[in-house]
Length: 133
Image (tube, rainbow, N blue to C red; front, top):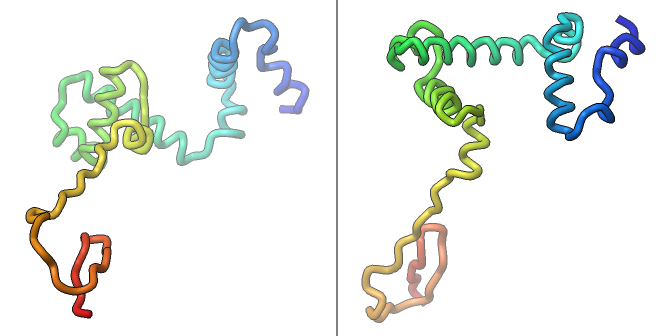
């Protein structure tokens, strides 16, 4: 397939009202073209897409996490992410979820703040320790 034919395959951005609409139209055309898929989608990406769809199919069929994990050799965490994607009607990877849903670390304070300490204070990642002078 020549470069000219590839360019003609995709719709013009000027014909769409938004970039998101244009991206959707392009994606539909790309999916229909096996040559484009072979050129720009790696075997790893194809494998991931097939596995996600297979997991989704089994979740919708009502199979348990253990059955799906045994059959497809995936972790329960992967199945959970796919199930959340089905519930939310959009897929977000575990990495994307961790950025917005990460719990803040809570650091405890010294249980006895009024106690007099002897020695030179030294801050460490575990808290303040007191070393002899």
